Length: 435
Image 1 (cartoon, rainbow, N blue to C red):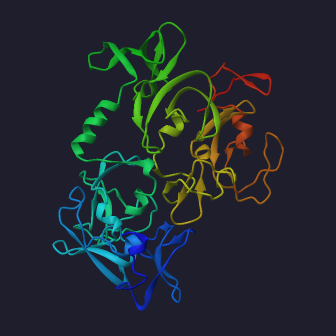
Image 2: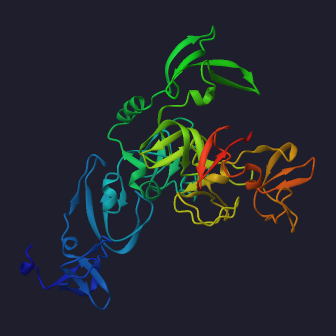
Image 3: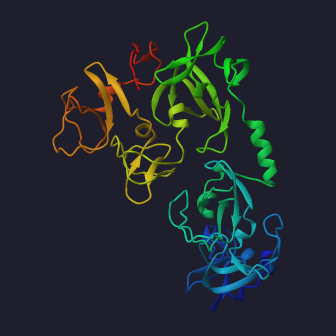
């Protein structure tokens, strides 16, 4: 309607105590019906501080979107609150009901996508208004780790044996982390096309059918399968001295990582590269995410829900985590962190991917990553400085020695042995051994 044709006063079913008066304002206001900011004409009750946008005052009486729901939704004006059957959260004033399915939802939830591909799960997940289970088992949201009400809306995986369930608002919070799938077959086809092997060509195989000579994208010469070396089967170059673990040689060239919906591309760097997740300089194979983030292989193999030897509960990744890291004590956690859903425990990528053991020239034995020290006064046996007993450290039980992590690993523990790295106008030659 034109502004001049709008009635100056209306009675509205969502606010029956007082009439609503037409107002004109250029400043923003919050519409109580749609919960969005608007500007321009609106109806309001100054006594109750109740405002509605003029478009929300006369909406269509029915809502239909067969791509998301097979039946027609009817608009229902309300004065009280309700629980949305689609997302499980509270709503007010206006709802949409499906008489055939006996469900009541927010107006915005009538168009929830039925199938999505979430970056933090390998399979497609489907929206359901309630979950049926044969067992009385608790289901926790795999994003916020709070209990999912099975009689309310959620997204879940249909694959046999996969109990992945997430809240609607948790999984749809960041649009960059999911993709709407029109058809499940569509995703399967896209997945097959997007994943490429790092092995360009298999040249020779053994009697068991295992590749023994390959051409790899990262190197100009062929790689051959070597004998077992320290319980690891490696592929070594028959020309230049290059060694790759068998598992590293077989990594997918392109993969979808749970951190971002975009594909991550495996690249090889002879020179140093900064891992944005562990915040350390690295060389070798790294995954590139959209040309913006570099992720080393230690970080790439970490899942979004993990068990950690340094904590008794599961940890899950949270993008907005602002907790102090319990491993190193840093307060400046960027790109999110792994936190506990039951207590205030958090770890950043750097501490989570620390080697469980390391060698150092000062001690003849393997040093073990240790998570807590009961002594109130602790010192590093390498640098002789104070060491915070609440933070992680390396120790030798045979020599009764302990040391800061930085004293054991040094500044550049993840640069290839013999490599060089320019740092503040100096060239450091890297000679370390990490296990």
